[in-house]
Image (cartoon, rainbow over all chains, first blue to last red; front, side, top):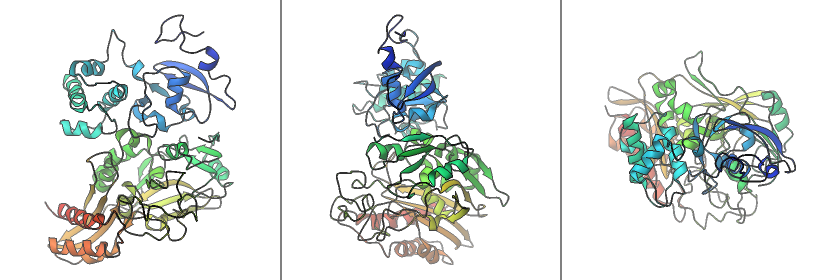
Length: 179
Length: 333
């Protein structure tokens, strides 16, 4: 049993042999640095970065929506840049730095973007929220005009079926104004 | 997804040598290069692409943007679309390219998608993407259900009785107007292919989309020096204002002197089976006064050979208005 950071000491989301992917035929060893911690993994070549994060590393904050790069629910940062983890193979990221929603903040010490989403009510069902927040955090470092229209344009890769868009834009603008 | 062997080559020569073992570089290729993965992985999940070997070219030294000796630009194959769009030289000298890239996809996809991948972007035709349906592009000889089916998004220029699939790229439309050249390393030699000659019309072989042969690796794209005094515009019309493919788009590079057009390069997107350069529109513009009537004549010339399908006839008028408006933007102020 390996400790799982999300579940706490002495608890693991999956049995070690599954979590490590050790029994997968044709699996290839890789190292991903996820949220600041090196993970030695064995992955099927077909495994997407998204499935690897969710199923092998058992960090389930990153969501699978369309699985075709159309909804943005799977957005994570690779080497500090936001990408759709569903359209990338885990193997392609051997040695790279991955940040997921679990790496941004904790329930006791929220990232400013997480706090702003709470303050602005930037979600309803919450399924798209981790992708929205990962996109919003990345947007802070990208060329983006000051007005709401610029934020909407750069957030168009994140779909919210509940329609919380106005509050999502407000949350991102709140963080931009305060930093 | 079918299983495959994942290969990370030591250099471009090794990548080419491995890819040269494939039977084709076209639809059905059993060896594929992967860079951003935004097209390939998507189509592999749909079983439209089923390569036995996938060659990861991300760690080859093909990721640079550099000025060329003649004052032009050299763009590496694996340069990310977002890096290209925001590069200071591109923003200064090739605004139409920056605008086109930023009008396409989403920020996440642009962070992944690459120069070469965008050049090789596949059609969004729903019949091509659905392996339960016939499709001459995916399975030659099975027919084209789009011609009698759902074709609102499909092409009106360059179509054939075998295929009416639209080329979805915005970047390539700008590159067509900028007269870019695609540079390829093949198993025998390197080649430089003008973008106008790179993509093929569907004709009777819609499974052949480009001139690439097995083993050919796009290494970079070059763009000639910017034309002094020219203005560049990319205008894209779509069903929603962001993150949507074009219904019609226009890329123009235009030079005006003394109230007359002295040079024009025009390309259209969203309406053609390939990135659609329009020498007809260019010829109609050059030497003419800058006014709306002449822009309308150029637009008529551009769309003269357009052939509407059952649901997409509106694109012909839309493309004309798009080009007229782009020309107005490019000749104002």
